[in-house]
Image (cartoon, rainbow, N blue to C red; front, side, top):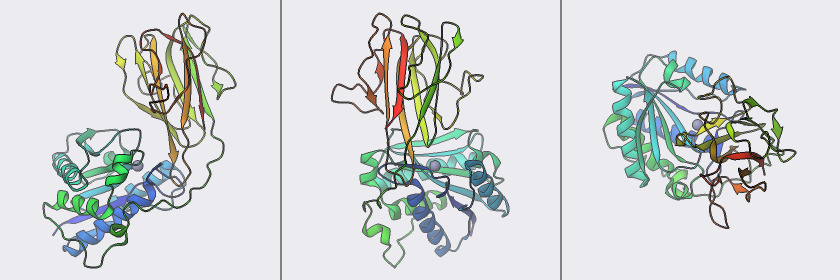
Length: 340
Ligand SMILES: [Zn+2]
């Protein structure tokens, strides 16, 4: 029989994502079922979940310390995703063949069990837990907390069984005692706490320099009408914000998620943009789990028109909204963003 470390991501002090599902609540339910299924199949399992870390960094360091205290065949990290996608994806450390095999098997098994999109195994060197654990490791993003299709398909027991099937290659039956989570997979979340005021702070690079940071709707970011914005840095005082820009040179660039800071010294990962004119912007606010959710509101004006286009809300479409700000043809010269 094999040995496993299993943990659920984040904790109630430094919560993960939330919207229709709460990451910290759901990842712990999945973690508990995975552990009991692996144990009942005769494996040795250690729970490496951390409920004490007071910062994101402390939480990650505590998890890794617990993982590395045991010699195991595989570390299994359980998370739920956010940011406006759908389906399951599983990360492994670039170059780990065990990681790749297990990640692909778990992703396929969850996709089949829940009937959601299989985004597949993804190699990365950028996830702390994967880079710092000694054993082969996978990080499972079971589904998206902010996607209604995923929420409707969500089932803790099926997901846990699929993870165990993917990892061990064996189909496991449900525990004899009916689990609470099976009987109410789409139970209404508990009443959410109010998050209170969240500030969006942002700055743009235009006309050859970075302009001072502005906040919410108090001002707008930019140099002046007629001067294209070429980079954008944005941060929020609680939770995180995901953004991407459509540029003249590259079209849509990859999404980048920012918490309390951006970095104008890192033009690749620290801010949005590639140095060419920004022609559209998309922002998406990720509410900390356990709180009533809030959204990113944002609007731009473009070259040749001094007025702001109508505001966008996250990636929502309909009621005159495109799901992004800008027209993908004319450079953005002024931007405003706020969280409500
Ligand atoms: Zn997470």
